[in-house]
Amino acid sequence: MHGAKERGEGKFGLIVGIVVLALGAFFLMNVVPVYFADWELGDRMETAALGVPNHSGDKVSQEKVWEAVQELELTPYLDKDGIRVALAGGKRRITLSYQREVTYLPGYKKLVTFEHDVSVPVF
Image (spheres, rainbow, N blue to C red):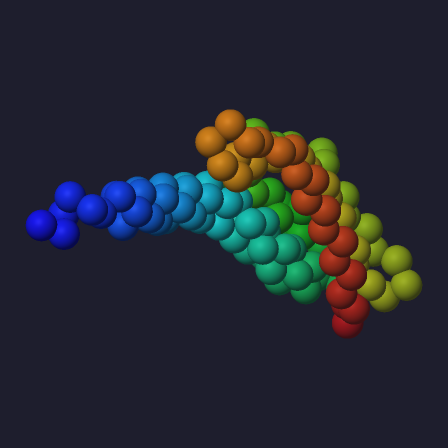
């Protein structure tokens, strides 16, 4: 007859735990892909900066970065003109910036600015 004296605290804790796990899963499903795509873009920018050591390499580098933007499905947030490439002082510099809305939790969205500035020596 212990069942009559229990107050349901175990059931409430289970429900809270399930809700917390569901919110955690929602957070990971929405946030990780956004930040991973940005990290991958930065990595691809460094690779693109290592190119032809003259000004014609600027166009090649911009094209490589644009291909990465398309593959990572970032075209709604960044256009080709937003990718700036310059060769100066023996270094190729690629810069870009874009904003993307991230849903952290249901009902909580935030506009996040991602900026990259890559400078690589060109030989």
